[in-house]
Length: 275
Image 1 (tube, rainbow, N blue to C red):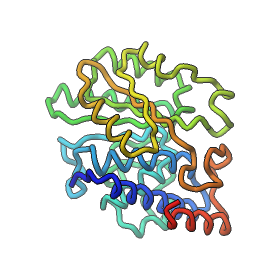
Image 2: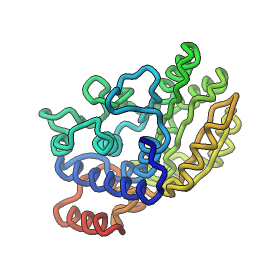
Image 3: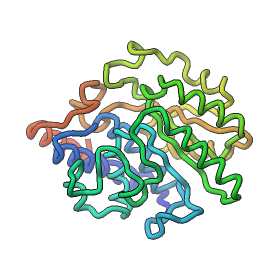
Image 4: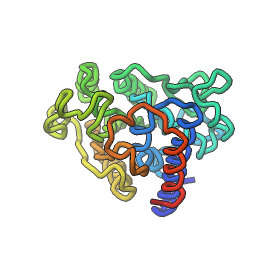
């Protein structure tokens, strides 16, 4: 069922953040920063935008989602738990051989995962194939692909972007999690992404810039992308890495580490307090 109430979506996104922190804390490893930054976007996608049915996760007509930055699997897993694809007890088994929720998404093990990802830079190529198949088979489904801003330093992303444009994949919507940080520090210092909007426009994309932690803007962005015909769309979502946990926000060191007990308790206090 599509949820349109913004306040309800905000509550779901907050619970997703709680699940993310719980998952990484229990595993003592994982990637909380970039997972927290995309919680609002995935909440809108799965609860407001995508044509999906958790009771029929392999439906040929379902919309597809590719998490190209696969290390942010805790965000996707949390969404799938909230949506009902995955039992909640799996949360405590994250990154464990006893569970199905491994460090990167596995389409062969996890219901609701449309593509196995982890090696950065490849997701948009796969999403192109899905979108092209949808057109060739007249299935009518849309394809969404989440990219990281550090990830798009990979050359294959731009080869894929040329392909998206060549085949006029207007049923494809890429999303860039533009939080400005990657594992080695600021994206601008590692390998700058000057005029990202202009870059995508030059590759033939309908380009939409939003606040990726604002539910209303996210909804408007996806609705705008659906209206665009004849070219692929990209949503450049300006987000805060570690969003929702004060000591993680805008800190590159939280790209890939787990909180200790004291940090975990503070994160829970903040998130459960709705801060």
